[in-house]
Length: 336
Image 1 (spheres, one colour):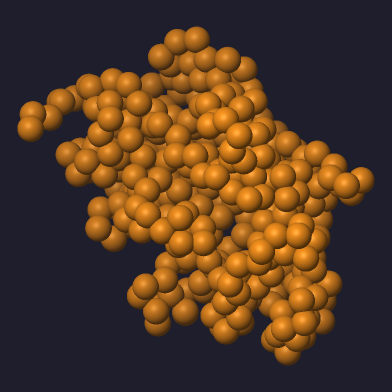
Image 2 (cartoon, rainbow, N blue to C red):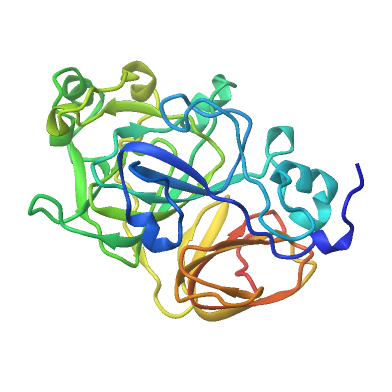
């Protein structure tokens, strides 16, 4: 099979992978997604490169984004990474098996998502079949539901330890022991591995996370929504919970200010456009938050572009989320 040459080292757009969810809705149509009729869609996976997913989360199948347009149209992201590893990733390492290390989504919650926790570093080291998951949610929309403000659940209330949490899980009282905050558009919530959390009804977010679908569920809101509850993972969850307070929300302090900074990625919101030099240490992902894109270097609301590390480009947009993957070479430095 012949391979395209240098034209692949250009900004890449991917076909979204849509996920039907019992808690989903139809708002992603307002973000440019073509949704199947009569189906509640909870997630649009913008960039994904997973060999397997959790049956209760991603559906159990592999998920590999495919390029939309250009010389690599229809090819899986893994194929592009394998053909041009240095040009695509710079000094940023791939995950095991040569996979792209982040999973990037839009999420639309019409109902509360399950209360869950992801593996801690110690647990993941002892259980190779699980993977760390640090994630960040940038709130894009927050609509009141049932007369209540849209909320984000994260962290445990003061005084809740392992015994209190176990009792709450066993007696179906988890909402009484988790901390809830109002979801405010423009705020970003970062949730390190081990943080008990749930996205609340009425909230639509852009989510950036490490490429893991390992989830331990402790509460599924079955009684509240009259739906069949899914299996809980009590012992696994209790082995991973972080009992210290969850990080507070961050709003960009000014144009280009950081809203998330982890060892895996940084996030900032920018207006007008972004100019990226070539030969950067890591790729950059840009998610359009407003406006309409009319040209190859213009981005509209709901559109996601991955800019390879070797690609020099100026992208124009009204407003966008700019995500830079972290490598040893770029820690502590913002994107150009």
